[in-house]
Length: 620
Image (cartoon, rainbow, N blue to C red):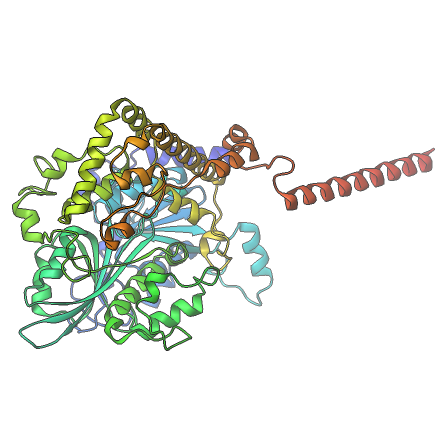
């Protein structure tokens, strides 16, 4: 088996088709009638000029599939439903790409073609993260297809069938995850993942034209899947879509979902203008772009919030009169509808459970609409562009205010600072407090320098916690194909999981030390906010209640929790073996189970010894 895998790895690494020959070769998929221009149909048989044509699917004739090998038929069945996705198709210990996907792999990833009449390339399982991220960064969608059955299980399944066909005699394969720029989770399969600090939002919007001076009612939902945060809001916008443009400027999406056939010309200008570089997908009304009742029914049926209840920000969009939580407030229906589009898309990508169970929701209110009007200055997209706050005329950071001022030591600090620049303070009390904080830190320069060194060692804790939540999600059951996947690098993935946990613990320990280093000088701080960050008692202030609420949070004391994890298990052993073995007394259930195993093992050993003595006596 090892020799076979090594030979296959060498075959992928060594060019089998010279580049000049590959450029002139007419691959098999280029000759198929159902792929030729003018003859292509979607999965429902509709032509491209049909108003409901779905370009994400493909009609593959049954007569064509009958002549395929069982594995290739599986590939075409998946491709017909995900024609816009590059399939990384698992075969043994390798991901393989076929036909048009293989061409993409060679042209975009530098893979090499294998010999044969159809385009074919691939790479080892362990390299999935590197190759998938490279394609995703270029705007492609990637599906990870895993074997969800062993050859032995396949044989047992076929034995139970009355007359298994040749298409039954192949291990089952399923799509375990579809990843795009707007749906990345950076799981253990993805290796180190993306090193970009910026958020990559998935945005959905629902529009209702009011026909009053060209105004519209807009509901939006945008999600940062890397940290699991949902932002929802609904507002009235003018004929220039000023508030929508401002939201896009502050939270630039990588991917946009809209309701097919329901976009007005003024919003279309936004899609073709500020959002020209974003990936855009039109979803079918109701079937994919859910309405509010269908969205809330899905959340209730899925029991995503069963353990701790619905998040408070989400409840602000649901009618209090409906105890079943199935009715949106009349003024919030479009926002819930936009949430439904995001949930459908995340569900289609097989990641909705990972994100919804984090319960992270925020209410989005455009600047200038809330009771916080006096707190932040309103900077719309035009102002941000003209002032070159976050990007210059060439679309880069060079020379911008963000480039000049961003000295943040942590990735999550950089993301927060970006939002501060897009909505600068204008409340005098808040500005003075922030100035006092800067002055306090300058006066404690030596302590701040030491704390900053510690902060620079922190990993991206926001994304890391989302990873840990996903990899340890207890409610994930066998319905998710990832739990049935046959992974040959499982040991490596387990070590990555343990590594993520240990990295988070080290990060929290460093954060605790960074804050503790400032506590001795905190009594001299004039900034109430800075005092709160180092757990000083909140002083009496004459500022408004709004400002008090802004700074009421304290830095949490994690000392006891960190001490528990420090002594709960051997960290180096866990990192080396890819599993955690609790020390005695840490987990009562584990201790009881091990005690019962010890008793059972002793009983079996005693029984074996008795039988050996009995057999010896019989032989004598």
